[in-house]
Image 1: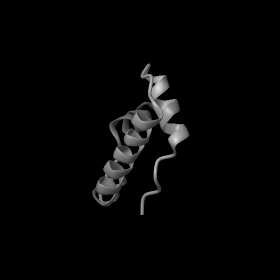
Image 2: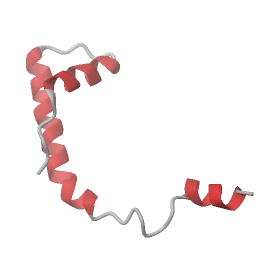
Image 3: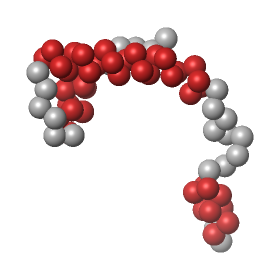
Amino acid sequence: MTKPINLDLTVALLGAQGVVSTPESAEATARFATLVLKNSAQAFAQLAFEDEPSGYTAALRKNAP
C-alpha cells in the first residue's frame, strides 16, 4: 500500500520547480501523485532491475583496474 504524499513535501517540491501553489492546488497535486504512485506500484515492483546490470555499472566494472 502506498502512503499518501505529505502536503508539506508537495508544497516544497512544487516550490522547487518554481510553481506557486495554493493550499487547494497543493492538496489536489498530493492526491494525484498518491494515486499515480498507488496505481503504478505493482508494475514497478515487477521490473527486473537486478536481472542485468545497468550500463553505467557495467562500464564501471569494465574500466576498473
